[in-house]
Length: 386
Image (tube, rainbow, N blue to C red; front, side, top):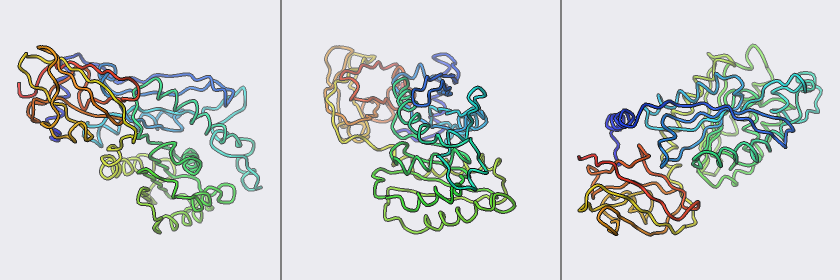
């Protein structure tokens, strides 16, 4: 695998110039939610040349509170800088705008039904629909994204304040809803520390895949929102003790020099920097247990080309570039039938990494989901050593 960042960047920009300069796109998508009985709007960012990169799939980041565009825009922008332009994500902005006609606000989405006098006094009627909002995200938003875009399974949920509380609560309902949870300055104190208690009493043996849980705080609980401090300290104290589950990676960050609002950029940078340095590579090695029979065909440039396929599992040579040779079926066609786990990631070479092939419709690894079809066809445009 090519690991030289400068070389990767050169190839990326050379390809952009070769095939035409495209731009990253943000779409406004309306969903008629049966669960919420409302029409809701989400934002969907797709990376540069998403349409041309038809042989690539992308992990997804879900950003809550994206009716405030700064959360969504900052997230979609920062990935490139943290990863030296080597990672591309689909970013979905989940919005909770105020509906004047219904007198329905963000907090209705994010808070459960409240019973304590303190909570009712603070939040009033703007609470109580979190269960439906959770169902909306799980059964309407995520399926829509997976069915309309080329997605990979290692998603990230990002929330701030009450939306951070919401994603932590979602984790306790179904730790598989997302694979990674970034909760920036969550309110752990509402309803007599209900969320803090849920996190402490959660059955962590349910986490059966590598999962990343990040929680941060600013100066809440010092000069304002005093009740936040004890709930946070109780939760942090619990997480500083071993959970006897190595599949859950937890990071806690405190930023007492920041306030509740401006802690978002510094927290998100810390969370994602840690994720890409310590979690990403291992998490993205995941493939399904089930195997699927497929046929892969590729058109090459010369009659005498010997083509190898190399990829992320045993049947693809485990990234050994001269282990799995394609069969010659005609002068310019090579073919191989094999069983693959999902998702399968691979490249074509002539037997070594210097001769890696540039394939139409991809800058990086070719990615396929063999559960979706049985025949895949590709076309080599060039070889890096030429």
